Amino acid sequence: MRTSHITSFIITLLVMSVASCSGFDSTPAIDTQVTIATKERIILVQPTSKSTIPAFFQTKLPPPEQNDKSPFPTLSAEEAKILLLELVHNPKDCPLPCLWNLQPGQTTAKVAYDFVSQFGYIKTDELEIVSEYFGNSGGVGISHKMDDIHIVTDFSYYYSQSGEVVNLLHLYSYTLKDYGADPITGLPQLAPIWATEQFNQEMQSYLLSTILKLYGLPDEVLVGTWLEEADYYGSVTYRPFSLLLLYLQHGFIIEYQSIRGSIGEDYTGCPYESHIKITTWSPKDNVSMQEITEKASFTISIESLRPIDEVTDLTVESFYLKFRDEKTRLCIHTPAKLWQALP
Image 1 (cartoon, one colour):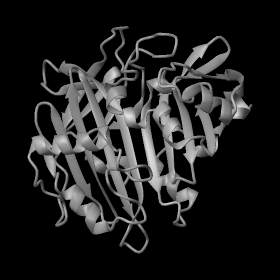
Image 2 (image 1 turned 135 degrees about the horizontal axis):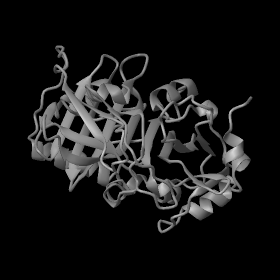
Image 3 (image 1 turned 90 degrees about the vertical axis):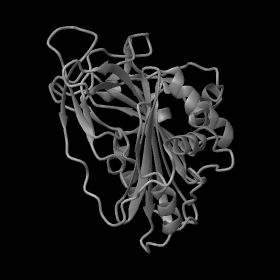
Image 4 (image 1 turned 120 degrees about the horizontal axis):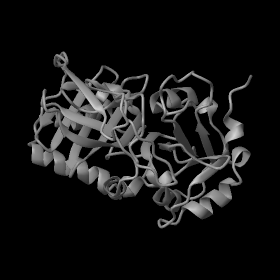
């Protein structure tokens, strides 16, 4: 189940200000799709003035169609919130590739479905939870509000070809800033934001330094950003920077997706200002890299990413030594000329 399956609707976002490691505001100008559990579509369009608050247009969509296996909640809103946040905060008894107490290659499809089905659809002023089932996949998404920040986590599972055992798991966590209700429609105005302490505290178990300390030297480290090509991206001013860690022997890949900055002749990406995607599988199973990358939905295709020692002054070993310290606030530098489109 892809991230878009967890949540019934897509938010198309365009925001005015750009973030980078050099200290700009962390709300980017963006033209991308971000999912969140909501019953409205919120379309943010780029205003003509240089206001720091984006202009918004909202339209309501009909609720998703239900089938005979659509989950219905058996937990209260408070019980569901406590359970899901505990799974995010304290996965101590569930080392990767385990996610949320599901173990790829071992957990049956029925157990995974029973786990998801207890949540159904729950909505309060501070919380929204959606769980869904799609034949050979399922998942649950939670969005909860902390001050003016929405922290969103989407969890997905996929059946094996036999349909009896879960063979892939996927987790995607990110943040949205709440600009308040639209004065006319009353619908929420949301935009993606990076570099929030709330997010880093909540996702402590999956931050880069934690992963490096727990699992050691990655098998491979890849980095990448969009190639620069004149007018190809139209009015988009946001560019992603992707850091990908492959732990093939452990059975997981983790992506740290940040805003690409620019310092001198270098592009930069700062892992401590990232959204996080994790895809896991059983290393004992014969799961192809093609299947893994299809479910992972990387920000940048894996074919466009490059080994860290080819495009930076870091090796896998030096990267590991520098970034395993939880206090580090280093950014990755790569020469911009390496990412220019070919003539």
